Image (cartoon, rainbow, N blue to C red; front, side, top):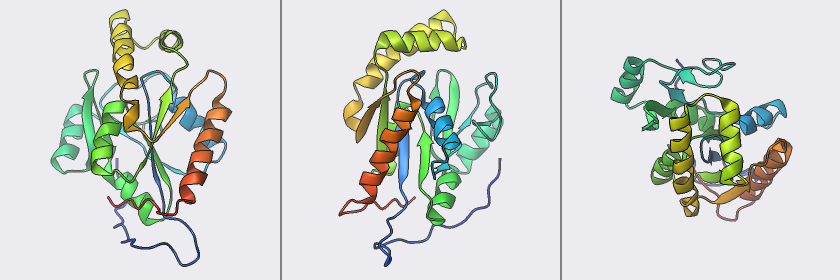
Length: 215
């Protein structure tokens, strides 16, 4: 995994032409709520974001591509990035490492591109502590029962892992006050979710006091 490093430009005031500062949108929610599906739909519809690719040590699932869905790294490669302080945040989730490459965000913001990153709730909490100026959106399942059905359809977890994810989801939902916005992720209504994210971004672009993200 490599990306040309571009130093972020210092931004201290609103642009003279009235344009807004680039946003960092953090999309989170329980495992199985549909974060990846929402981002895939946003890409297909041409939503103008830089889609931050996170790194992980977990195995690829069917249909996933390295450098598109995730950067799939070995444990040694991941540790090297930790040692070089190349992650904005990283954590162990279900016995695998996940991390947000810092350079993915600094490059996008330096080019004045809005960036969106999907992380679990633990990752969102870490980013909140580092970059509270980001926009935090929580994807909420219609119900725990619906989340259970989605995880079962995915067929990527054992029954023990599935039970653990559902139990964790209940705790993650309790952390809703951490976020700025909540959107219910309903099955087969991805366009509605995308429209709501778009509406949030439009509203944020019209803030009197803009969010200024400095990594």
